Length: 235
Ligand SMILES: [Zn+2]
Ligand SMILES: [Zn+2]
Image 1 (cartoon, rainbow, N blue to C red):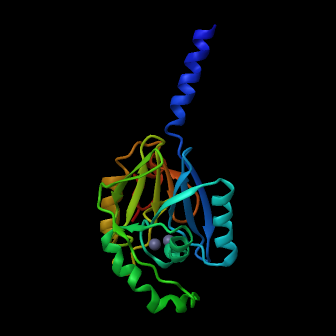
Image 2 (cartoon, rainbow, N blue to C red):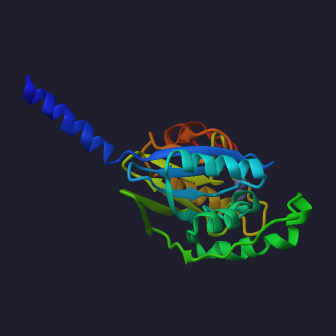
Image 3 (cartoon, protein in one colour):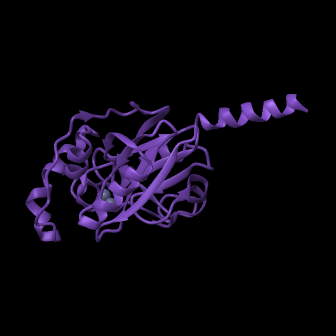
């Protein structure tokens, strides 16, 4: 049945067009999740590099080298210290531009004043190369990521959404059974709840949420059972 075989081949080939891969690392004492997204073209983006120790930087470099990836952009969901510790290292190692939302700049610029209090005396500052606006499409390889604005944990927090594979990189907005803290400078609890409902809970239930800390979850699961913002919200 050669005809049927050729149809199968076409379908498999078609599905690979949208095959974005996700690699996660958990770095630094805050147990922050760093993500590398890439596709079959080998182009990659690095999101929230929290690598600080030599061994952490080596693990990230090793993965990129082993998979022959070509990082093309460095993205921050937001600029709290645990998400940007490796910014300078990644920028200089791969000579790629740093992108984040304009409202995160004061958050990034405040870090040198307190980094040593958190035990990061050799923190290396980094400068942005481009400010991402809400709704901007970020491209690498054959992938196009949508940007969703979800402030409240921090003032310019973005979530990166890959619609074809129903995956989002959510930073510290929505966690498995929790939400981002809102007691840090620029945080606001009501704003976070409002934007999670407006921009995340509008996504399909099956969308997999990869957060800045802890395991992944799904939009539908959090809509049903999240104690802060779901149907069962108690706060
Ligand atoms: Zn944060
Ligand atoms: Zn964090």
